[in-house]
Amino acid sequence: MSETILQFGAGNFLRAFADLIVAQANRDPATAVGRIVVVQSTGAERADALNRVGGRYHVALQGFADGRVIDQIETADSISRALYAGTQWEEVRAVARSPRLRWIFSNTTEAGFALDARDAERPANATAPHSFPAKLLDVLLARHEAGGNSLAIVPCELIESNGQKLRDLVLQQADRWQIAPAVREWIVRDCQWVDNLVDRIVPGAPDAHPLKAQDPLLLSAEPFALWAIESKHAFIRHPAIVLTDNLQPYYLRKVRILNGAHTALVAHALPLGVKTVGECVAHPEIGPWLERVLFEEIVPVLEGRVADPAGFARTTLDRFRNPFLRHQLSSIALNHEAKVKVRLLPTVEDYRLKFGKAPPLLSAALGL
Image (cartoon, rainbow, N blue to C red; front, side):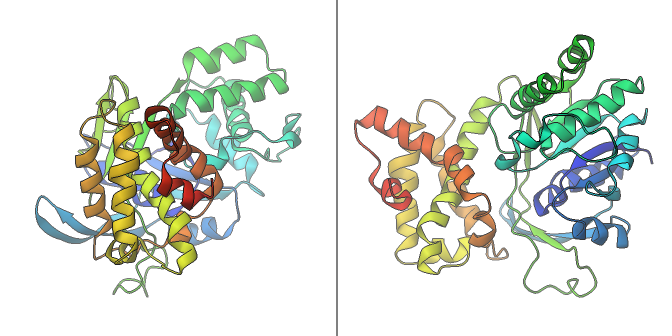
């Protein structure tokens, strides 16, 4: 099967979400998508681990769906190989030049959507640029220089209008590098910058599982998965994918409620020594605190803006109570400051505008 996807990032979420969805689609010739080449930038260890197992690992889907318990193992085998940007950038460029390549996926977290002053000039040799937008621009330039067709860029970062914002960052980098107008036009007009929203809780590796000794890349995830894409055409046919003309309500509801609750717990519960989301919702003080944050401070500013915010909040609490998953607050705390800016501060501001005062619980948790 051809390598049709270049993916920046090999973290737990992409491997248990997009990469698993591609693997599931590939099982049917009618929906097969192709294989994924992963680019790892933060270190060679994950790339080496993927290559040692030929990109094959398992995902334990555990939780509840349609009123029944789900506890099943899915094999993810969509990754063909992994490259380390620090030493294999010319190989990354070679993938970009391939006529079979069709899509670029990414999840560099909110912190990855930023330029770097060290990328003032395009590297003349096979050295990777520093920032993700500069890396992406370098890849697109390599493709354009080889006469390749345009690509669809699908950033899975939890950022509103993620496709358009990534495009704008790439264009800012193009200005720094003084890219020719015709190439800039190709990037804007021909390449597709896909706004999308991803939703699945992926805690990471399970603490104890029969497969853990055999599979060092084993992951656990909830059965629920949603990939909402603002497009008229699906690039993958899969039950988790929803096409929409307006992604904004999906984004607002999910990021403010589910991700906002996660980040609020990091601020409030992690300093108290509580380690997991499940422990938080079962805690005699933190559980009621979280419900008050959701139903007194987050949901009220979303009413009339998204569909059934209270119902989504109740479903979110049910997902947090999943007894199979140990979602560590320490993993949610990664890039905490950037997450607070996206997930909680807009709620604080909306609450002020609506009620004329700061939300007391969130303000106390965030030290505002």
